[in-house]
Image 1 (cartoon, rainbow, N blue to C red):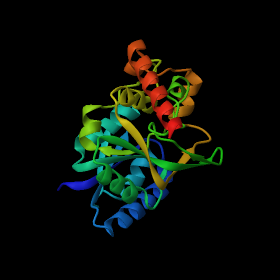
Image 2: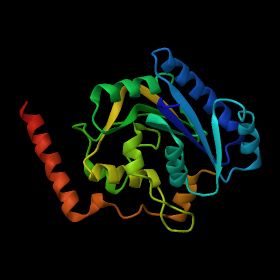
Image 3: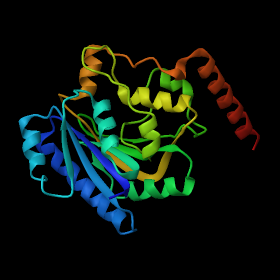
Length: 256
């Protein structure tokens, strides 16, 4: 049956680390349910190890939809989850991170009020394990956001909520191991901005992001010195046009 939100959890070698993740999803879904927001949960296990398969096998007879794939690629796993989803919106989460309690409810209400095709990101991200820090994120429409930062940095994490149709029309590009390409979420955000789609932060919402001590795809990408795929954003005509719009916007703000 169709739902308001499809929560798509991607897993591979998390094992028991997935348990607090699932508990956080149950809590966020339950909190959203209190406001009449219906959510389904989809797990996409990509080349999972034995411990991860064993953990998720406990949910085989539950309402969680468990699927196994052989992509070896986080972006393609997310695309597959979108393909399976029935929600108006999709919300992504890696199987070792955690939702804040109000994230789904707050993001859904923000999207319903706005009604434009946008990408919604938590305002705060709490990092833990390898390093502990609290980061406040800015949307691409924030007057303090600088488009040029995307040349060197990924300005958002891969946990976001957006219209299912938007993500289906704009899938993640493949970044298989050994290709020299990585940071699929960084590339995806660049492509989205190039198409004129806004990334908005949801006020007073948060996510918990695990920076693993070892074994993360991010660490592997950093070690291999991969780069993001070529993006339309950095085509000279596109990038210069968007920079001009940014400058004009800041000029208008300064006159207020």
